[in-house]
Length: 480
Image (cartoon, rainbow, N blue to C red; front, side):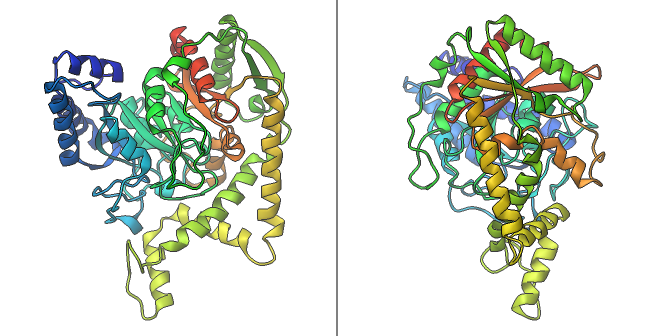
């Protein structure tokens, strides 16, 4: 059975009509994974037993004539930095090569409670540190749109799985653009929720004040359906917001005529690919045709975002990854002394990019440099957030490119970390400000590489940005 055409609504209708079973759907996806994954490397671990057990529960509910939950039988992929009970969770790192969590992340538990079928864990940059998915200890992921190109990072495996039809939806994480940038590279929607909107319980931390879990899907309706399931307060996460979760599926259908869309000049300057700029401006023009009012914006602290991000994120990573010492879990390399064991374990367990960021983070937190770097970066972060607050007094949403270029070639930027970091230049701002954002397709370049349009909104405005995205999709904007 072909996996590619399925949507959440299509699966629900087919199960209710008893045209297909959830087990048959899962089996069809596994057959497609067996066929495509060897070349894509999108999945690291498959969870056949758990998936079929869940599918059988769904089929039993259908047989009893019960009302099915919203994601019943829907095949889902989970980024390998999100904990799954009994399923290997590596973070794309050798240091956790054999780690099996004893519990599920809240987002995973909520998906299964809604009937979703967890197919397996997807490849990612090691500890979510990367913009191309080339930093995984288990090999790079290839972009299903163009196999010689990166899928974006760090959630490249999740984006590639959805784009290739190897999952209907997938969970990724976004710390500096790691949902939106791969969504743009692979030509699918990818949503970063407001910080605190989705529980981080069970998310293996990179940078705790930035990390968020969010969905990939092939269309906006499916994106909204997953958000409706995973959003909401969780007492296990102290950063989880108590704000009520609206009915996204209803609210996204509202009209967009009259909405004010801001276009900041700082996102269209030096470094943007000419074809990306053309496609994004065409997308903004379509939004105007749909009745939105375009308002030019200035966001003066944007130029400091990359430097600010790579100080704050690496500092938090230095603290969070200190737990991987060979003592409690994960890899342990014996040494002559305790300190020698620490050194050998981390030397063998961590890859080059993780080591680079840990050294940078440790440096900016060190005595004598804390005020000059980390404290100053936090102050600039506040200024960036203030830029957004001021902008949202004038507009309902902000539209920008997701990435400055289309997906680049595998190996093209691995020798130049700074160029790799600049791939996130348009996305890190939203993470620093804590606001939600989505990347949606807005056509392709002459080389048939997808281009992403980013829509950013005020805190807890997921309904609004999904509403704009759905109107754009219905108007044919994905293929302009």
